[in-house]
Image (cartoon, rainbow, N blue to C red; front, side, top):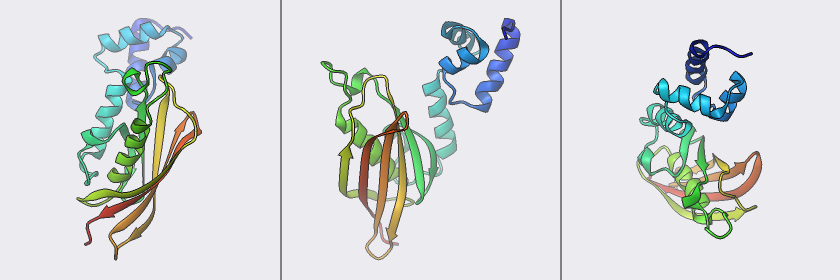
Length: 187
């Protein structure tokens, strides 16, 4: 159903407030307009693009929760975290992340996303990677979105080690799997 500009913009504001992670493409489909119309509406309403909205929501929500490193040092954008339990981050693969010749993401970016998420999920001032066992299960291409999910498997208070599993997905397809043995300060 097509709406006039004023109605559409009011609904756009409400929709983005309700779900700040909605893409311009999804908004265009929802309101039966072009992506360019959505972008112009956002510009007129001073609503930032998706990446900035995600960053803003994450910073506001998690700035007091992540203890082991500053949020700006996390590779990707944290969208959910429960310290010493689990965390989720998003990394959009862009031109600066890929090899020029074949547009395949460089592995160190996927590792960095997973490793920094493993550090961030630790509820301690100090968290360092002691050992990592990783596997890349398929190539990631420019333009794809990588969702990394960290899960704390074990905390050994005596040794100060925490085992964190991180699995990264593109469209629900596993692209990276890792187990990180993390050192944390002994309390």
